[in-house]
Amino acid sequence: MFLSRADKPCFFVCLAASQLIFILLLYRRGASSVFQGLFGPYPGWDYSKTQDVYTNLSLFVPDSEAVRTQYCPVSSPILVGPLTITFNKPRSLKSIQLKNRYVTSGGYFSPRHCFGRYRTAVIIPHRNRESHLRTLLYYLHPFLQRQQLHYAIFVVHQAGNATFNRAKLLNVGVREALRYDDWDCIILHDVDLVPENDCNLYICDEDYPKHLSSAMDKFQYSLPYWAYFGGVSAITPDQFMRINGFPNTYWGWGGEDDDIAMRIRLSGMSISRTPLSLGRYKMIPHDRDSGNEENSHRYNQLRKARTTWKEDGMNSLEFRLLSRERTQLYTNLSVDIGDAPEMPTEPNRWSIF
Image (tube, one colour):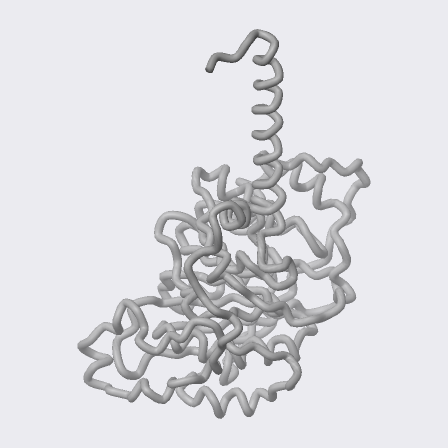
């Protein structure tokens, strides 16, 4: 049936409106969320049935000969999927050490029954979050061991009382971690996020930076918006240098994740996204930290990111390393990253992409 002349304008208006609505949905909720709603959930996981993260770790029997001659399987045989995560019981560092007796000084671990295929460094920016750090370490060490990774955990502690700068601390962590080892993958990890599924592998995508925490309980297990790259992500050293790392100029809460998402696109890459059914994380409840107030300049900074990203990052990083301590569960890097500069007042601009 052919459309009459009178019907054609109505048809094209309806078509344009439907396309606009779809694009808005993609931006606000993320493609994974939209497609999951249209075509059903990813095949998957029953999160009503979970297991303890320390389940079956004892099955990895030390074998020094195998470590020298045999690679670990591509897929670990003791992954269980959904994990039991609770925040109602504080953990002590001593109790965590006792449950992770093969973790060595500095938070290093290598499989003792085979030769680890992947070398992963976990970078955690930190200040005044000791209870959160202990909770994360309690779950993260066995989580990584279940994946048969050669790994180390680096905690980058911002000394002093200046405004918090998460992005700059991550740059410091990457630079210092690369002094220790030739890592295949770097995990940029917020201290208050705990993974819920041990099949969410902490290894990198060889082609593109990978967003691991695609489904946080804070956002009802969906993406808050299309370009979101916050929380936990995996990036190779080469990819990190290609985007010039994080910006050093975002002081306070907000903006740096959107900046790095823009850098990924400007450098000719795209974001690899873990499926919502797998990239689930629980956030440890907390209030906003003193010294980490909302960055009121972030929209103006994002507006300029297209012209500043090549000058503001790893190639302009300045800091003072105050101490390097190898504790039993992690390597602690205490750093002075300076103070937030005075910023001129400008009108906010919301259009950043």
